[in-house]
View 1 (tube, rainbow, N blue to C red):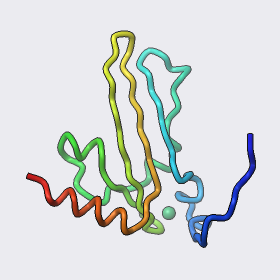
View 2: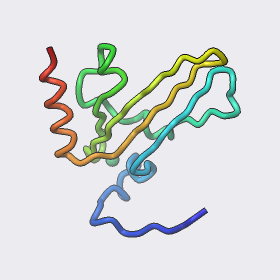
View 3: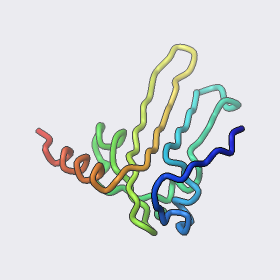
View 4: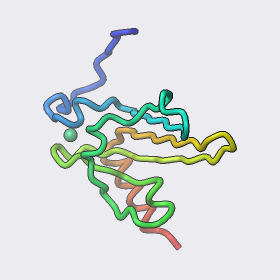
Length: 112
Ligand SMILES: [Zn+2]
């Protein structure tokens, strides 16, 4: 595939053993009953820690995570679709700026 890797501003994440292995956007896909098609998130994604409470239906599927080493923020979203021939799980882990993280965290506090 393409090795094209244009520089995108300064970054220190190359020195972080977690973030250095995660792309700006990581996705997983799991289809029940079709293990050959499974595409899990990298193991490094599991080392990120939640930056907000993840208890509750919405929070569990949509929350901010943070790298315990360098503090980089990620937005984690999980979607689940029930299908007759096997349910589908999809996760999206996207690197976000501290500003984005702040607004996401603030919004959560606004709840009913
Ligand atoms: Zn990191």
